[in-house]
Image (cartoon, rainbow, N blue to C red; front, side, top):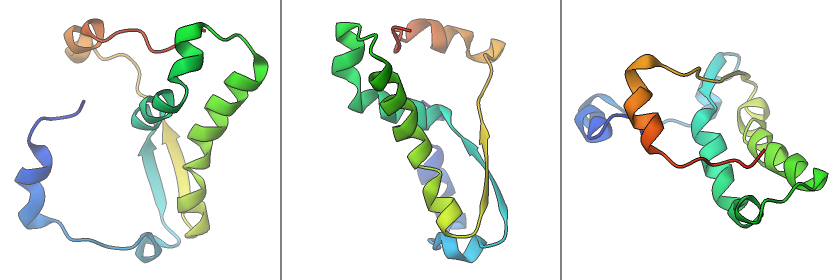
Length: 101
């Protein structure tokens, strides 16, 4: 996902900082990657087609837990859910479905 080779290209103009340095700021967070990361932890339930309420609660809880870090560092997170983009239609259509809901 993302732009192949982007991080190495930006290496010369980036620096490591602690989230604390953004205290009091607002951060827009692209949640799409968090959802994909969470799917990895829930893959067995997804494959088996679990319809249990606790499974879906756990899936969302795991994703939302990631918002604790910016909040603990006095940041206001804004969670951004990307809508389908026409420019990414080919990439998205080539990916397998990740949710049985």
